[in-house]
Length: 273
Ligand code: 8IG
Image (cartoon, rainbow, N blue to C red; front, side):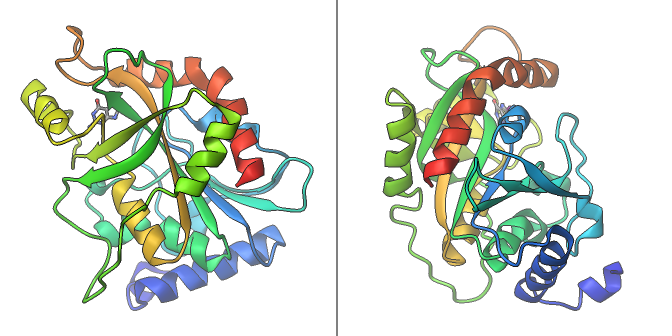
């Protein structure tokens, strides 16, 4: 559909239209669980089960092509293991720093809810504040601090965010990986990485992880009634934690290297979600 036509729809209508297109293209009237695959998690998506349909987001209402290297832009309908349940897998996300506004950032989440999903697994690659978390360490998100200064909700939408990151689903993840670390994720606007002083600030505020995604999606998911599981992959020590400067190439490589471990873990978690 044309840009001008889609901009006349409110976010819920646009999500409903996209969900309808996905149902037609995948042959699945509804999906059960949604996943958003962040940096380093692409391989993990391949292990969930058989891919039954692959869509180009550019052909689904409200989505745009990703601008970040290392992000695989597909929307897939995947059979979860050998069950009859279906996962809707977003191979990329729109980041706030791309400048398309917060509606674009959370569109996929709203589409997941409109497609019938009850839960969403939000993954990302991030910087870690704990020197004991080497690159490749998966960390459950227990809570977040949103430093973007914006909300995905418009109007007087007073949504409670206590237990935003579902204790039940965190328990499920722990069942699969008992030693899984847990931490507070701090979203900065990006696209630049933090200064060492900003990373120290994040730590003083109670943060353990720094990144450029996830919190706005989690808020929109809660508002849409989805149960949220957040899992970060520490792909680098946050600025100032290690003496080496950050490089995007290293971030991608750390994710690739961790894939062998986090892929099977994610697949087993999704079976139980
Ligand atoms: I991958 O160290 C990844 N994404 N803000 N800081 C922020 N985002 C990130 C980082 C990081 N690593």
